[in-house]
Image (cartoon, rainbow, N blue to C red):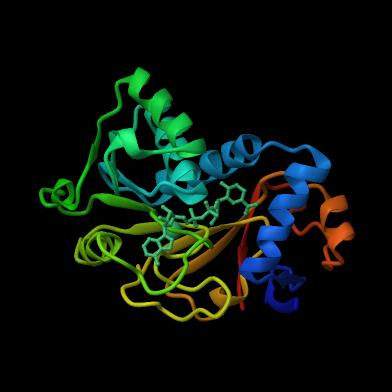
Length: 239
Ligand SMILES: NC(=O)C1=CN([C@@H]2O[C@H](COP(=O)(O)OP(=O)(O)OC[C@H]3O[C@@H](n4cnc5c(N)ncnc54)[C@H](O)[C@@H]3O)[C@@H](O)[C@H]2O)[C@H](O)CC1
Ligand SMILES: [K+]
């Protein structure tokens, strides 16, 4: 099921995909085309860091989970630190429990000396107007938000600064747009590759980032795709 429910600033329609369709796109890109997850994640993290720099007034706190979404947030933290943006990371679990791409990105940050803590209490002393990067959960949300993620989301929503969500606001079902319990209410969402069907009633502004998935992937899966980016690495989307 694909729908054309989003438009670029020039009025071109952009196909929206469900979480299952996006999972198929990712799988095809990796398993059939040979694009590595880390290559896509690098693009996501770099473009997300651009958006964070665009909205930020002072310090940045990246809140990261253990999936692809968290990995993208950790990549973003590296790009921010490389530009001397004051950034720290709060994980939803002890760093020893990270796995896969999130563990990979964490180890780089650790070598860089970027502050990484875990536990929702790490969000207790966040200064006024700090920018929050919401990289807790993306399209991988499964069922109602469970503890401790609900406490992180609640805390993020209670902070005064702008929040930038990666791919999907944490707690929002990427396909239906329903909040499955607690859900982040961001100023901006930077979604990856194609908009997700559930982003049609989003709080805040929506941007689409090019993470380098080639047209052939969409063709193989029968997803209507005309590259919407023009000369840019990301574009604004409207409904
Ligand atoms: N092509 C792309 O779009 C790419 C997307 N990327 C990013 O990866 C995520 C999807 O990654 P995945 O590992 O499949 O899932 P998530 O990170 O979204 O979620 C897993 C994370 O969430 C926790 N979790 C899941 N359900 C719940 C729940 N009900 N309650 C609490 N916690 C939950 C789980 O424990 C994990 O920690 C996509 O959104 C993009 O951001 C790739 O980086 C690049 C390619
Ligand atoms: K998110």
